[in-house]
Every structure is written in structure tokens, then in C-alpha cells.
Length: 220
Ligand code: SF4
Ligand code: SF4
Image 1 (cartoon, rainbow, N blue to C red):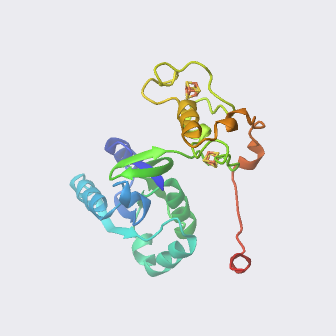
Image 2 (cartoon, helix red, strand yellow):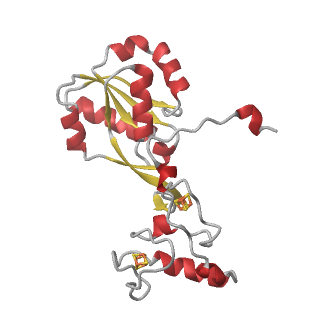
Image 3 (cartoon, rainbow, N blue to C red):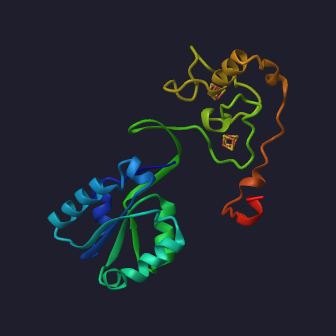
């Protein structure tokens, strides 16, 4: 899930200071779960902007604003309202905001900051457990990711600076490598600690990345 956090409301207002009419768009998926772009948040944003003298042309929650085909269809269906607004306010992740720029051709202001790919632990609590490196080595590290859990991204064991199980970079977090060690120990795979990983192949994460999936081939 893409984890987002709403920008400070004054920052959003500043981005909209030269705009008199706004078309608000939320997202039924990740932003709804993060409470940054669901029905309730979109309604509150509409009320807030109207209290600040903005004309809200529409306040909608779109299904997957990160889907270009869906957005283009919406853009056709809602052409008049979109063209009548000074800007869209996107209450989604950055992926959704960019896709709406491309799909509608309209100016877009993002209402949210996009933070990380997150595991949903429970309602309103999200953890970063994968850093999207494109070169997954969880089979060696017991399912715990050193790129996400160790601030230094160390690939082959701890730095030695941990104190009482906490990371030397931030005492608020557990040492990622201690978590990996304990997991390997608990599952009888401690020998994996001797398996030296090669340096991370950063060429696999050069941005922007693109992937084309052959749907027919994948069905075989
Ligand atoms: S190694 Fe870590 S960052 Fe890379 S893909 Fe696997 S879980 Fe994600
Ligand atoms: S203390 Fe542990 S988590 Fe922190 S930087 Fe060192 S190895 Fe990584």
C-alpha cells in the first residue's frame, strides 16, 4: 500500500492561493485507508475550502486515480466541470496526482505527501518493510529487509553500533540486523549470516522504471 500523509493545511491553501475554483479528487484505495483521501476527508476538505472562499466545482472519490485509462474516461465524462475549475486538488498519492495531470491535462495540486510502500499493521498504523530496491534478497535475510529496516541499508550484517537492541542511528527503532539475526536463529537458518551478499545492484532501481507485463503469456 502507498502511504500518504496530508500536507499542512496552510501549505495546501498557499498552493491554491491564485485559484478561485477547485475540483477535489480523492482515491478509493490507499488514500482511503490512510485517511488522506476517502469520502470523509474529501467532504471535510470541501467544507474547509468553501469556508476560505473557494468555489468547489466537485468533490469526488475516484476509483484508482493512478490508472490512466480510468482517468481518461473520467476526463471525458466530466470534461465541462474539469475545464470550469482552476485546478484539481488531488487527495491521493503522487502516482495518482501525476496520472491525473497526464489524463486530464489540468493543473494539479497534491494535497498529500507520499511517503513509502507500507505494511498495514492495523487501522491507522503503517510500517515501511520494503524499500522497492528491485533486487529482493529476503530469502537470505529471513523475510526481514535490511534496506528498509536498517537506516544504513547494510547488506551483510550489523554495523556493531546497536545498544540494547536499538539502532545507533535512531534509538526509537529496533536494530534491523538484530531482527534478521533473531529471525534466522528462530527458523534454524543462522548459516545464512555467513552467506555474503554481493553489493546491491543499483542499476536495477534506476528511475524512472518501467515494466510491460504480457498478460496473455502470464496466463500460461
Ligand atoms: S530486498 Fe528489501 S527493498 Fe529489496 S525488494 Fe526485497 S523487501 Fe524490497
Ligand atoms: S544499529 Fe543495526 S539497524 Fe542501526 S545502522 Fe547499525 S546495523 Fe543498521
